[in-house]
Image 1: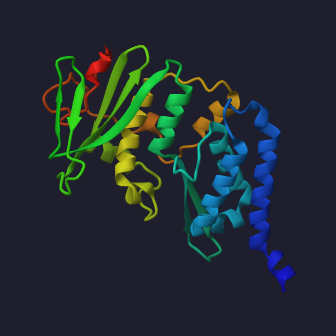
Image 2 (image 1 turned 135 degrees about the vertical axis):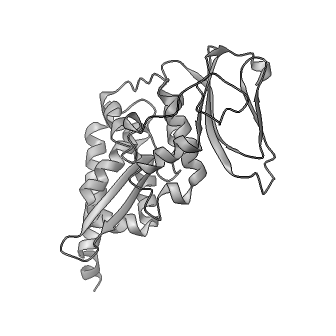
Image 3 (image 1 turned 180 degrees about the vertical axis):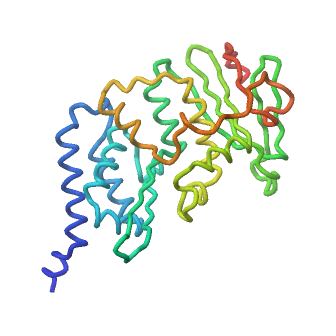
Length: 276
């Protein structure tokens, strides 16, 4: 009986996933960026998949396909168990002859921040993203820097108004990018996963708002992966939204009293770190 269980297609698929993934890593580990602990990331990815019934089901059916996606995450140093990246599975026409398996691949805002810190050509001192609500307070100070304050214990901060990402470089330059509700909804409208119940857009909405702001900020961050393999993997680890071809954004204007009435592009400024 035990031998029959061990030889089921499901078990074979799971073992195939582990074998293919291990082989891919062994073959290419020499070209991974410095500091990537491929073995740990592999173990964490397999644990994450085993904890996700829908993803595990697909991994048993298409182990090679899942292995390639996980390999790309590992090549960048992204950890699935820490929710730095996702595979969102969906099966169309389950059980029918025309059954189709769809996979949406995306990086979480945590993963985007990790990559920016690690691979930015200009060293980053700090990078953070926040969601802004109607009852929050925010303004531009005398240096032109965006200041956002709120009560973290307030259970009613009002409706969401937008999100922003601030990047502070070690050189002293600070940049902030803003996205308001309309721009975020445009991004979500072209998301491949947004219509699925288990999509991060529906399970962790605040995180996706932060990610949208970060992705806009990433357009101004020069990245050097130091490896063609990692550079290739970067382009293959986010199929949810093509940020380079999303609908046109609202006109960009100079900072004004309400940063979220329109999409705002801030100017790069020298930072007095005592003001941060």
